[in-house]
Image (cartoon, rainbow, N blue to C red):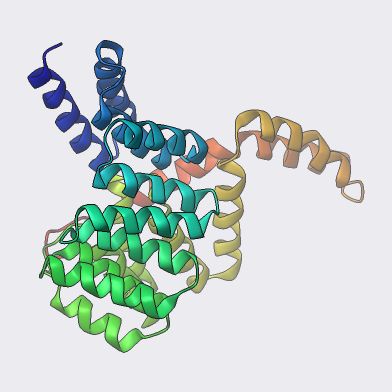
Length: 293
């Protein structure tokens, strides 16, 4: 594989990662690594893929390999994200700072600093970093959206709403949609918040923030319904073998419940992942997506 061919595959992989097509992206990256095991960008992108899949330890190892080959902004950014996932927040800040030193005018490096600082509970410094990212790419829905969502998490609804008004109403960036959905939920417009969450999930069904917004919207409409969705998602996210272990244990724990109901509950635990996916698919069918929403 030539250098140009490898770069082309990796550029395609990067676009696929942005589109949440992780399986196809990983295939492209592994093809490059098969011919050039020491390709630094390939290891960096593999780190991002593994991070998106929740395999934070493996992501950290790939990021470190990439840094050892060529210390780039992306490699340090992805290392910071993996460290946040592992709960090593102080080290994540150090990695994010290293990315910012390599690329001091990069909005993405500033955003990674903000995420690491927020994770380590430094709200003042985190807000400064979110604002720096938004200023470095003025008008970007990605960075404005992330700033607005941070302010919303901090309870500053007025400022978050002001930022939401600055966004292009036709933007379909996840950060912009989630900010508008979060503001709608905070203002008591649960149905509108649900639609924004589903818009994001339409293109990225694994977006945890969108799933969380959907659950919050459901819970605001009905506590029991919200609890049902939350429970289904929690159990459904477990590996099949975990559910197989949980099922008989749960059935035995329900000794006060008639035997038949205990068996039904055990069967539900096993099938929970499929049930949740069907529930989500049905929700997605009920929304008509428009550019102006």
